[in-house]
Length: 171
Image (cartoon, rainbow, N blue to C red; front, top):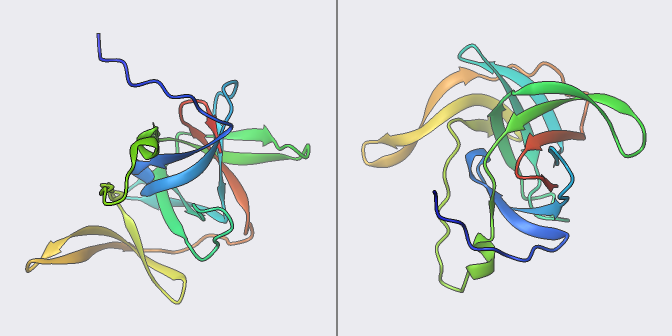
């Protein structure tokens, strides 16, 4: 039997990490009755990368700090019709990603937080995404290998909500 993780008392809002999305810290609202969780994104677009249906979305991980942005890319698991809290029905993408809870309770000044880089990153200029790229090294320096150009389909929705299947934690 695998070892049991330390148990923590969680409040209604906690800092969590979504490492595969490149989100080292984001505030999450805890809802133990939910089957999926909502992740607020300021833009959402479906893309195809190397023949795989993906969703690309932007997140402001720190509350009230719109200047801090992280663009995430994840494989589409499903697309579902969801009724929002105001009663409107809309189709939302569903992704699946691991979540880490509790790491922040142990942090002390001087600690180092490892960050797992996503498989693909976005290279852009003047806030315009231009290419999907892989992070690596070349000649002993950090480098990006361009994978493909980004061709946005639509930017109609400036605000969207993205469902994630993550440990019954609601964002």
